[in-house]
Length: 315
Image 1 (spheres, rainbow, N blue to C red):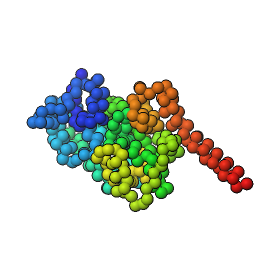
Image 2 (image 1 turned 90 degrees about the horizontal axis):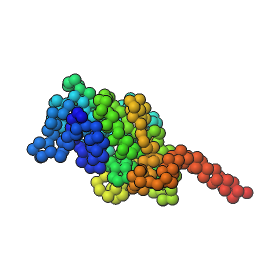
Image 3 (image 1 turned 120 degrees about the horizontal axis):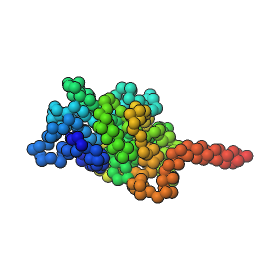
Image 4 (image 1 turned 60 degrees about the horizontal axis):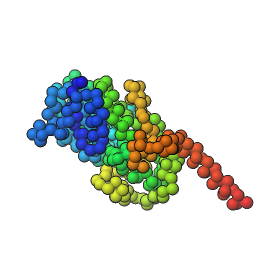
């Protein structure tokens, strides 16, 4: 097996992706080395950068790239948040849309800066770079910080804002990283399930839990609410990402042979109940599988029933 160096493997996401990579490669966990050997890539020609946290900083990326002089391919995990969340966005977003993160969301801005530095590094030599932009990542345990925040914000409604949402299962991100690394893909690739959750489908998944309406203006209130739900430092500047759509298309990565195992509905249910997909019983699996397709129909049926009740009440 060829050797690859992995940076940023700490945390739940990094550990899972590292586990998947180890099945196909001789993996060198750079961050697990002695302090005086940090970012010693051990002669590896392939580097996987997994720093999918709100702590992505220019200095950290610069240090990794400085040690990557002999690297010929880099797979970097970024975030779909780099597109920003704006009222005029198409649904879904393709990779051709310019990067325009919301400035109040420092985590999205940092990911965009990291992408810029990686592309500049690529232009300095005969190198290939695959930049992966995942939708919010969730799992049965802890997911990514953005995914956890979007899960916590799911019941919140602000005024009439009710955008569609996406959730990417951690295993689907891991399989995308392995594919991009094995095939040394070059370019930018969204990583997302097929489709997304409409407002009606999300309401069906939320079930009977109360919807939370926060008064405007509420940027700090929303951030504090999410931080309390997540239980640790959460991304700040979330408001636009809960008000406007930023769901992404996965056509480009699918064309390379990648297939998601989970839909957004399945990923949401697995993360919400805190169980691995394989541990769900047959009924729970069937519920998660069918709910994404049937929630919109159910929501329409509820609306029709409410209309009938109101009609009879007016007679």
